[in-house]
Image (tube, rainbow, N blue to C red; front, side, top):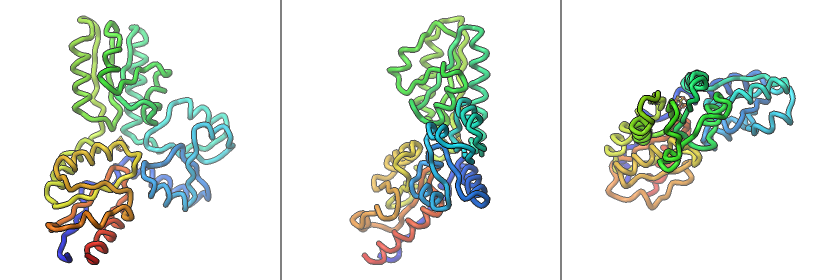
Amino acid sequence: MSSVIIEIDPASGFCFGVAKAVEAAETQLKENEKLYSLGDIVHNDMEVERLKAKGLNAISNNDLFNLDKKTVLIRAHGEPPSTYQKAKEKGHTIIDATCPIVLKLQLRIKNSWMDLKTKNGQVVIYGKHGHAEVIGLVGQTNNEAIVVESMEEVMKIDLNKPTHFYAQTTKGIDEFDRIATYLKENIKPGLEFKSFDTICRQVACRLPKVMHFAKNHDMMIFVAGKKSSNAKMLFAKCLGANQRSYMVSNGNELNKAWFVQPLKSVGVSGATSTPPWLLEQVVQNIKTIIKNK
Ligand code: SF4
């Protein structure tokens, strides 16, 4: 089985927000032996391990209080204002690697909240409860914004208030549109309603591309960390386009039994948090399996 073509998806690799955060960490690690990041810098254990070996340690928000005067990196997801305050009180130096797209969204949400405060209105965010980016967004509103994750939660929204509706950057467009349409049709007539599609196209644009890529190969290997939410969305598209799609965290999870004929080509893709070096490593593992078949 030696003439199998193995191709890495040209649209895969870090999104620019994650790339920027990893770059900021590496730059700091050249100067500091130890750097702390609030939570894992990316949803990819392999990349977290690689950076840990260079001196990057993930800490929790509570740890900010237990440490003094450290250099702390804020990852691409961003943080609420309370984190900056805590860091200041404890004398930490902040390396802010919040993605510019998330920063802009935080500012828009803050402005909406201030505007709506004078009108007894509400900010609603379509996002995942407890997700770091969502905590950062809700923090812009003194924790008053309402987070909805499902239609069931949308049904509980007070429709008698002026409302601005936003989305977490990595949410799906179809569900966002469904909720926006429901709110537009049901908010009491005459009351202000604005919806802002703030979904990041770095993920959304990859969906049709990964489908196309998966369709063009006999088999798909999707490489991603188990905690990545965009990975779930992208892998679902792979599976929809090609039933011979498998998700692995690294090359050791490849199963030899998957590599059966007919197999002329294997596509390798990953989430926005999957480092390019890991994709290359998986390609080498695939080559070894195929060679020994
Ligand atoms: S997915 Fe988009 S918003 Fe999120 S970190 Fe990447 S570029 Fe930034």
